[in-house]
Length: 154
Ligand code: IDP
Ligand code: MG
Image (cartoon, rainbow, N blue to C red):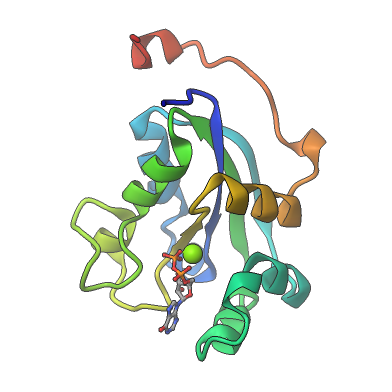
C-alpha cells in the first residue's frame, strides 16, 4: 500500500558537508518530488550518535562510525512523500561503494564504505527512533506543496 505522507529521517554526513555536496544531495531528493519538512545543520554529539546507531553497538566499525559522525557538522532532515522511506534508500544507493549504482548519491559520489555521505531510516520504526534524536515535534512543519497535484496523479 502506498502512503503519500510517509516520513523518513536523513542525515547528510560530515564528509558530504565538507565536500560541498549538500546542495546536490538535497537537489536529488527535491527532484524526485519529495517534500522537505524539517532541516538543520547540526554538530552531532557522541550521545546523539550513540542513540542514532544503537542497533550497531558492538559491531567492529561502531566506534569509528561514532567518531566520524561527530567529526564535523552534518545536515539533519525530515522528508515527506509517497513511500519516502524506501524511495530515499533507493536515491541514497547501497551502503558499499562497489554496490551503489550510478545515479544514486553514494553511487555517484562515494568510494568508501564508512564515508558514504548520507544516512537514511530503513523502516518506519527506525524513523520514529531516529527523528526523536534530532528534532522536536514543533520543528517538523506541516504544509502543502502547490506542485503536488503535478506529482501525484493517483
Ligand atoms: P546504511 O547506512 O546503508 O543503513 P548500515 O549497515 O546501517 O548501512 O551501517 C551504518 C553505517 O556504518 C554505514 O552507512 C557506514 O557509514 C558504516 N559502516 C557500515 N559497515 C561498515 C564497515 O564494515 N566498516 C566501516 N564502516 C561501516
Ligand atoms: Mg542503517
